Length: 138
Image 1 (cartoon, helix red, strand yellow):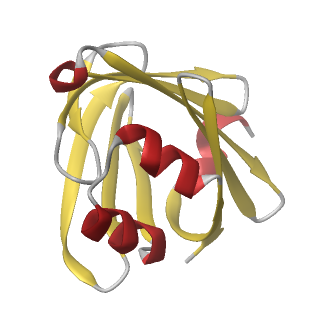
Image 2 (tube, rainbow, N blue to C red; image 1 turned 180 degrees about the horizontal axis):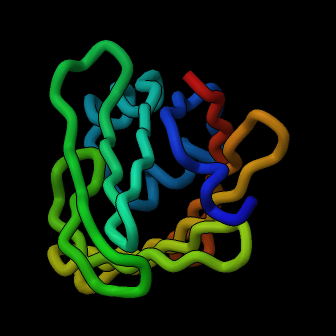
């Protein structure tokens, strides 16, 4: 199936390791609580070699749309709107992402995504910290 399995829309159902990650990133208490309870929604589309990802949060009307080609750098943003330099590659049936936050002294975030059954498993790593999120199709 390859990365075609990602096509469509997904909603976050669970996250493990969030508190440690939020503390290490220095999120202010109000943002920490908001993102702890927020459920991210992601839609994947592609047309030829052009990919589109639409990212939002359940119940929040504003979304962000990112377009890119696999393996090529593009401008993106974190959920709180911080600008990121990003690259996404496909390795078999997985997406592997690298995001660099220039405002935080080049802090690097690595995200690996894969599908297991009807769930998308997302592993996020920043420094020595890890967070795991589980998404279901919507």
